[in-house]
Image 1 (cartoon, rainbow, N blue to C red):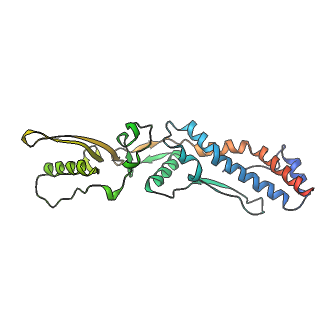
Image 2: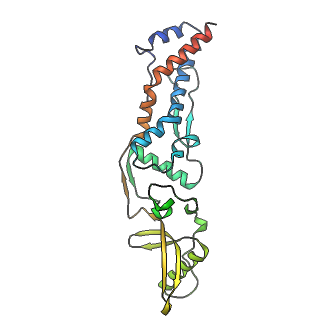
Length: 247
């Protein structure tokens, strides 16, 4: 948490001037300065910090706009005034997962739960691109592995691949390397009951391939960038209050 000292050498004269005016002048200047810094983080500093500290940014919209929320400073007691900046996890599961991932990026840690999208789910099959909207995980749109029909394990798997191809829906495939969400993009019958298929791997579980994330402190660094600008913000807000009360 970054703080601003209104009794610093650069601000002390303005602070004294405000103290001689109406009792609302000083807390108003402090409160507006805190809020200006918070919105500076929202509009610019968080995205700038992410671009400097992340290897790849697939969606800039996550770091600006409605995904970043500000809880404005409120009240008159300057000893407890604070503004808070953070990320909103409201929305679909992909947004909540992204926000949880940002928490890990800030503090570091091991991610060994849930699933991660593979490059086959992304635009142009590139890890640097966003996931195609049609490839977002939807539990209700996944072909079930359960079947009442008889047959061998292999024949049931072939049946699921065929259904995936015809219905354009993915299915889960469990293997020694992990649990994958895949979709059949081509299916061709050959002689002797053989088939030739092509699968697109969309997601995989993290339980067998945990990821160690190093802390980037990107939010803390964004806060430092905003705090460097606070003396100028305080000067502007103090001068506004002085002009307002000396009219």
